[in-house]
Length: 93
Image (cartoon, rainbow, N blue to C red; front, side, top):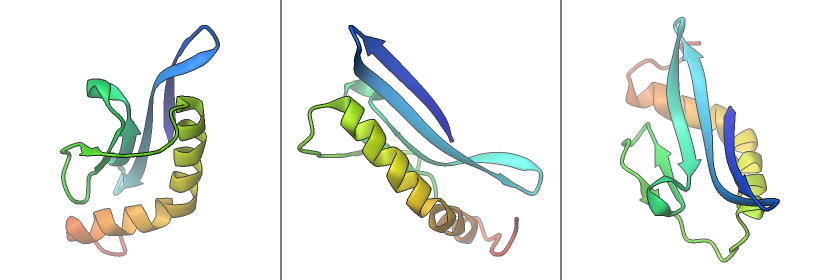
C-alpha cells in the first residue's frame, strides 16, 4: 500500500491510499480511497475505476486515513481475490 498525505498546519487536508497487488510479475491497482476531485471516495478496481462517493460522519481526515488503512489491512486478501475473479485469474499469485 502506498500512502500520500497533504498536510497543512499539522492537519491532514487530503490523502490517497492505494493498494496494489503483484500478480504474475506485474503490479495492479486493486483498491484506492482518496480525496481527489474534492470529495472522499473509493475505487474498487474489480468493479470499475469510477469513483464511488463515501459518506462518513468524521470530518477529521486524519481519522479517515487511519480508518481506511485499517480497512485495507483487514481486507486486502479479499480485495485481491475479487480482482482476480473479475480478471478471470483465480488462484494466481
